[in-house]
Each structure stands twice: as C-alpha cells, then as structure tokens.
Image 1: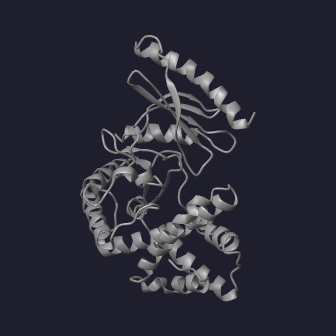
Image 2: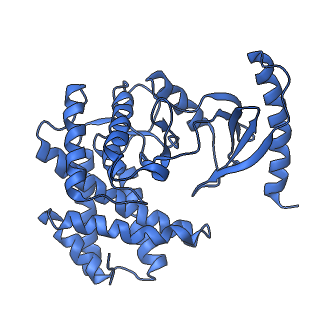
Length: 337
C-alpha cells in the first residue's frame, strides 16, 4: 500500500477520536456520519481534507514529517489571531505526526472570485487585515530577513531556473551583472523598515470569509521589509492587474499605513521604488522556486506562470533605470516575457 494511503488511514483514526472529543466538549452530541473529501493541495508536501456532516465542516491538514513541520503554523495562527486576523481555529493537533484539525474558512479563495468590479472592495479588506498584523510588536521568536536569507532566496534563480530549466551557466560577464543586480535588490530590502511579514500574502491564500478575508499559508512568516506583503498582494502568481490600478492600491495602502502608525517610507515615491525592487527580488525567487518544484518535486504546472513574473520584472525595469543591467542579463539568457 502506498505510504500516503497508510497516512490517510492513520489520519482517519485520529480524526474520529478528535471529532468525538470536540463534539463532546462543545455539547454537540454524537458525531454524525460524515464525508471526508480532498480540499486542496499546494506546492509543498501538505494535503488538506474537508470533513462535513449536518451543516458542520472542518479542515484537516496532513503535513508529513520530516518534509513538513506544523509547529510554525500553530504558533503563527495564535499570533495572528491575537491581532484579530481571521485565521483557522486549531481544534486539535498532533505535531509529531503532522495532523491538525482546523475550522473551515470556506471554499472560495480571492483567486476564485476576484474580478475588475469587486477588486477594490476585496483588496480594501485585505489591506485592513494586513495592517492588523503589521501593528503587532516584533517580540515573537521569528527569523528575520537578513543578508543570508535574502541571498539564499534570490540565488534560487540562477541555481534552478538558469541552471536546471535553461540548462545554462552564467559566464563571467553575466556573473558580474548578477552580483551587482542581486546586491542592489538585497541592499534595498535591508534598508526598509521591518515588521511582521506573511511572505505569501496573495489572493490564493486569502479566503472570502466572515470576517473578510480569512488568511492562510502563514507558516513561513518572518520579520522583514515593510513593502513585502503589499507588493505580493498585487503582483500575484496567477493573475495580473493594470499598473495604474496597482499604483492606486499601493497609494491607498501607504496612506492607511501612515495613518495606522506603520513605519512606511515618508515619501510615496520612495515607498513605490522600494516596493518595485522588493517585487523584483521576490519574482526572481519565485521563478527559481517554480523551476525547483518542477525539476526536484515533479510538479511542472507552476512553470506555466513563469512568463507572468518576467512580465512583472520587465514592467519595473522600464521605469527603474537602476535595473537596466537586469534587463541586459535576462535578454542575454534568451528569455522573453
């Protein structure tokens, strides 16, 4: 029997026990016969199931050790909930085996429902939730974006995309370009004010929920640059927006952040430049991650979204002359957005 089927058997036995405990504690009576169906999967080794019966619904996370560790998810869920952010309630946990029983925030992500007409309202709610956790004091035992982490991330681009997907190696000139470009991006990130960073705050990880939005996939949070999450929100892996609209949303965030006491850059143009460069660092990282997911994990479908990230990068290069060498490097690799 495949290993994942054995895990599912173990998960089902554990779930029955936890549901019985939960129903008893809540005074809901006997656990009715329910259905367990696949809810979703992602680019990691995690799987999610939905249990439903008689109007009640729960999500079960299966995060197999040693590839996955539930502890950061549990800790961050409690931290974000303390700020009033709508995150899954953890009803039961078995960290050793990688099982969590969670509240169900619904089955509609922002990605499922967002369009040109409702984007203003949905993003306004997302900004409000972002500001809520950006107000948290930086006293949790979390790692920070430092030179080493930023460098590890950006180096995913030459290692996995250039090296494995393109099957190329930088020559001496390309290496020199890369060192100057990556150094510029890292220095810009390190110069920004720091606060709590979700690291993947985008429509696929936001649920249309009450209160809106429900926030997911926060287990990799760190302390880092103030522009990181707001840039992620509008420069998504799976949908794109006109630049004029993105600039308007960025200004809305910047104004609300200043009013809320968030340490954004005092001048909007400085903030916008920092957001642009932060976005390019992330885009290069994500391109590398998508190549790694394909070549290491056997999941090629994410490579289909790589052109979107090159288009984001190209758009920023067009208004940031300090990134001209990045345009030269990408052109020398034969990549077209």
